[in-house]
Length: 348
Length: 262
Image (tube, rainbow over all chains, first blue to last red; front, top):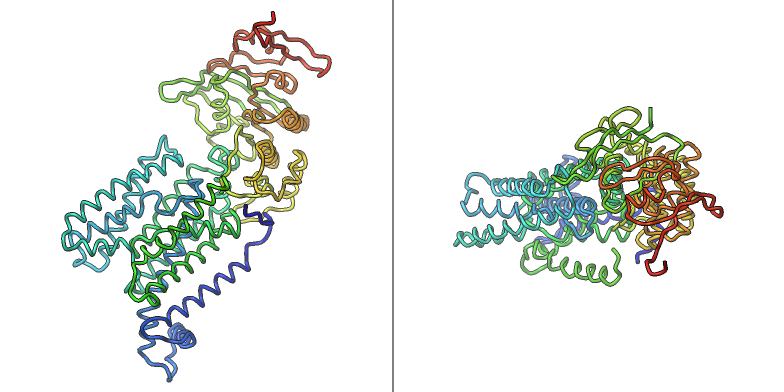
């Protein structure tokens, strides 16, 4: 259906990459100026430049502006950008490994594990120990879940794609019952838990940015390194083995890496759905299924999409809608559209 | 030393033994057929020979060294596989899929070189799929897809080509086309090991036949030695005649198709 005259030997989609990068940078600058205190893009650019170059602000600029842009808005914006990009890259990885265009970074139950960990931390009100204890619990929950799912799905050291998806579904179902039970126990804490589960970038700080930056870099590097192997793994284990890819090993490495970077994102931002599912889809329509092109393009597109959604809820809507709810409200119907289209055409 | 040497290999799925003490050796310049009824262990044997599974007993050696001592990439330069079925959920183009055959020859971050492109093109021309090269694989018919997969395996340029009932779903024209192309590779010094259901196809193309029955090697030899009524009756339980056919210039088997026309 999406017949394009793609050529396998052509160069990377430079024009698209440049265009997306430009949109992302402009988006960041415009978004940083939006909000209760409106600041023009030119002033935002001046403030960012002054901070990066270490010079003092131009005399005409209100120092409050500097504080608002650099210490309040930019950390939140960059966290959203990096989480969006990383979830999209993880989505590419999962769809390629599980040979299923409908897989997403949460397919192996990482989000449920993180939610369970966070809910537990909020229930026992552990946040008095440290500001980072909820993210830490969420991360540990996600990683523990990942290893339970991998252990459940592994037969003779092999991981079948359907077994993996099924194991993820089962474990996620058990965990969501667990979360329900925690909510039941939580009484007055329940609002905090629900709020966390719906995801938010509010009051994120530079350390959060650093954490997701590490996750983003790890995700991108691994996806680049295994780009061609991922393409060949689309042929199925028997064929990809015969073409020289150590499929079982590569699949394990990529599943663990993809889940870990997702866990890092979720522990910082809560559960944000659909970005990791839809972005790779959209980009596949444009650049085709070659993962070496899909990864960088999806990173930028995921970053732009989540930046847009977060800006919408932060600065445009009259009151802040939880970001996870917003992405699901926009992404859900879109997913239905793709799903329906796929059914009607019988092809991906 | 044979190119590939299987020494008394066995394989079991849990308690259920599907292959027992099979030994065979493959020499360059020969076309081998692997025959036997459904469930006689053909696919399992091929899986052991391409290191997709490990034998529960016995060993498989390539150039005298155990398969396990080679990396996947080294193995992929020595043997290529044409599977029976092929499904690809992503919209790769035909030329992209054929170029995947060059994967074991291209360094990790390198782009395909002139030789890689030439080999891919040659394989597409051999299998007459060059006109499809920009089509998306998901839009092809079953027969077209299978020829693309065969082209991918040829582009891989490995001395040993394994065919797992590669033409089972193809019409007679494309079946003969694929067999003629791979037969040419054998004449150039390559090796083909093909699991085949059609006894006459095997008789026409193979130099040597391995006949499997219930997980063991029942017999091995030339088509004239193996495809004889007694042997076919013993393995398949079917009455037949076998003779040299003047028209196709090969040993052929003729079956008693119906029971009501004696």
